[in-house]
Length: 229
Image (cartoon, rainbow, N blue to C red):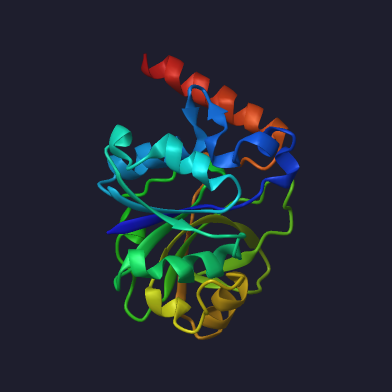
C-alpha cells in the first residue's frame, strides 16, 4: 500500500517561521515534523510515499530527497499553487495507483497507528475510512458524527476529522487534477450514500497550526524520547 503526505499548505498562522521554511520541515525535537510521519509509516510497513508540495517545495525535496534516510521511497507531486486537499490528491493519483491509499495531513503530530486494520483495508462498498478525534479547544464544533462505524455529516455529537484516512481512488473520479478542490464536499456526498466508515482515536493528536502548538509538539516529542532512552 502507498501513502500520501499532504505538505502543500502555506502555513499562514505559523509566520514568520514559515516565511523561510515550509511548515512540514519545522523542527520537532531534532526531526522535521514530516519526518515523524515518515518514521511511523515505515514502521507500519508503508514505504512508498507520495508528498505534494507548493510553498517552498524545493526545500522539502532537498531535505527528504528520495526518502532513503527514513527507509522510504518518496515521489513528489509538485503544485504551482496549493490545490486544496482533493485537488492535491486528484493530481497525485498517477503516483498512487488504483487501490486504496493512506493520506496523512503533514501538519499534525500523532501516535495514530498506521498499521491498524481500519487503515489497511476498506470495507465492502466503502470509499474511505476516516480517523476522527475528540474536538480540540480550537475546533469545538467538530466535523462529522460517528454512528455504528459510519461517518455522518450531522449528528448529536460531532468529532474532528484528524486529517488521516484511507481512500479509494474512485472517490476522486470526478475531481479535475491540477485544479483546486476541497475534500469535504466529496466526503459529505459519499456519507449521504453510507459509503464512508470511521473510527475514533483517543490518543495523541495535535494540529500543529500555531507556534504555540508547535512548542507543544516539541515538548511531547522530547518527553517521548526521554522515556525511550
